[in-house]
Image 1: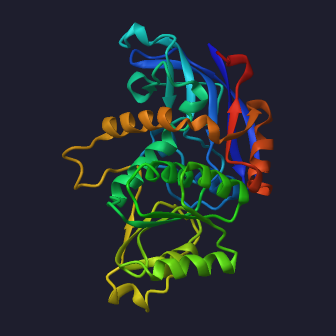
Image 2: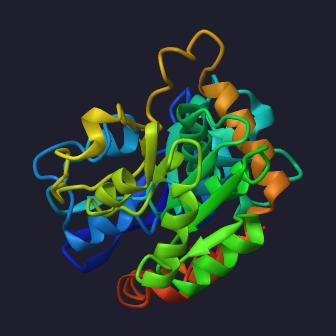
Image 3: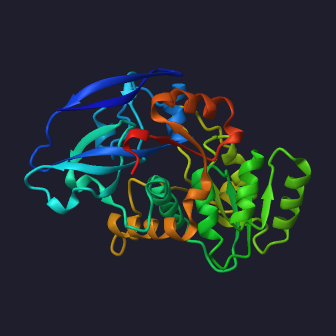
Length: 347
C-alpha cells in the first residue's frame, strides 16, 4: 500500500496534515503521485477563512469535493498535476508515466478514475498545467461575455482569473480594455498583458479619468464589464461603469458574503444585463457546438500561447503549506500565483 500525506482544513485559519494508506487502484482507477498543485487565492481562501456558505457540498460539480460539506474538517484544492504511477486492469497501460491534470485536493498521492484526469501535452510543463482550471474558467467567461469588435471593456479585479481574461481579451480587436485593481503587482502585470488603461480604483484621479473617457463612448459607458474581484461591493461599480444595454458578467463567487445592489438608478431604465458565468456549465446557447472537451482544448492552447508560468511568484514545499496560506491571507499584494511543490516527486 501507498501512504499519502493530505492537507486538511480543520477550522478557520487552521490546517493539518493527515496520513492515509491508499489501496491498490481498482480496475478503472489510477494512482497518481503529485508533482505540483496550485492554490486559488479566491475560492480556496474563502475555505481557509471560514467564509464558505454553510451546510452544502464543497462543489457539486467536482467529484472529490461533492462528497464533502463546507463543515470542517475537509480537504480542498482543484489544481493538481501529477504522474500516473499505477493503473487498474481496465485502464489503458499507455497511461503509466503520463503527466495529468486533475481536480484534486492537495495531497502527495491520490487514486481516481482513469477518465477523471486530463493528459497534459508534451509541450506543457507541470507548473504551467496547474493553471488549467483557472484557464478553463477564463475561457468560459469569454464565451459568456461574447466580446464584440470595437467594444470598450472594463475588467474589475486582476487576480489570476482576471489576468488570464485580460490576456485573452488583449488578442481581440477591442477598442479599449480598462483593468481595475488595487494591488500594484497585479496592475503592472495587466499592463504587460495588453490592457490599455490600468487603474487603481482607490485613486480618485484615475477613476475620474476613466469615467470621463467612458462618458464619451457611444453608449456612455463600457459595453462589457467583467466582475472578478470576489467582492460584492464591486457590483455597484460595475453598474456605474456599464453602458446603455451593456453587459455585466459576474465571474466572482462571493461565498457567504451578501451583495447590496443599487438597482434603483440606471439599471432598469437602461436595460443593463447582469449575467452569471460559472465554469461548471456551458451556456445552453453554445452547447450544440461547445462541450467540456472543446473548452479544455482551448484552455490548453491558451496556456501554451500565453505562457502561464509567468504568473508564478511563489513556490512553497507541500510540507510547509501553511506558510503559503498565511502569505496569501496577510500579504496578498506580494503574490500572483502560489504553487505547492512536492520535492520528492519532482520529474
